[in-house]
Image (cartoon, rainbow, N blue to C red; front, top):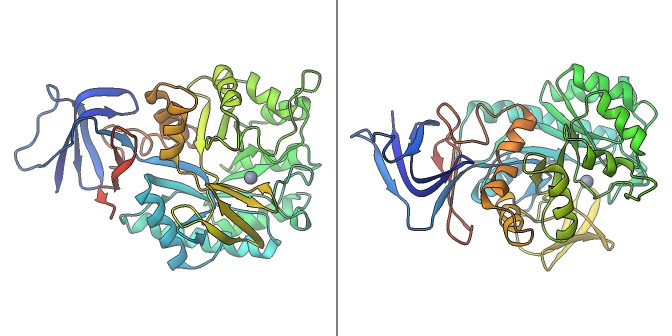
Length: 388
Ligand SMILES: [Zn+2]
């Protein structure tokens, strides 16, 4: 049994502990506390962090389409390995590979491949990001609010078609973005909730009433808040009005400073508080890769000055959760502890995995990120293994 004791000026569990000790044993956390509280076993390897450095839980991303030059729909083990390695290097130690709207057969093939890959990843802990479940973004979305999702492949949901996707996913489908105003969306939402899949309101032109009905059916999540949603106005508050007003819903947020103005993020924070926001990347294959032209699904995406566009429309990002946390502190002025919580614990609670992920406590996976004063990622451990 390999034990390691990390001595850190600050440990965010995400609650901050000064002069902390984090003790890991193989792939799990054994203890966390102050230096006075934790006895360091004599055979433990000791890692002493520099002044100003900190340890946070590994970041979790519920919305990622790829990284390192590869897309999660490529149906190749090498490609997925490259995505998982790149994300881990950037501090995202677990994620939900997210499919885009594409021809039904292509989505089904991708979902089927991902399901097999996820089963395998569970059994072979490696120094890579841990894919926890599939997020399907499309095809059951609004044509009007589709963003760059191709209109030709957006379809009206039916239970029969949905069940074919679910079957291909073999229990690994965890999130599906759905526009609640679609004709059979209520049936779909009921089916998803009954089978442990989380519906997320997104790419939607829902009115307030339609969003409210979805919430009554059990929807608790909104996909990239503000983006690809019916705009809020004072006489037509729409889906945004529902999310802002309802504490039971967690809002995914792309905090890159481009997708949502920092003032709108402030407003979101005032409404939702520290517990109601979940930082996501909406990252594309260009994450952790050079700027230039990328193929994403059937689209050509230009990545320039840190922004991804398809024919001028914003299309995903090259953001990481670690960077989003820094942005929440630097652009929005949030306490660091709360920003970290939005990229770790909130996400784990939303997905029902907080016993294992998103917080540093005994028994949880040893997914750790070491950050310096500038909040740059210095070292990452994924299920106890150092990421190169
Ligand atoms: Zn989207």
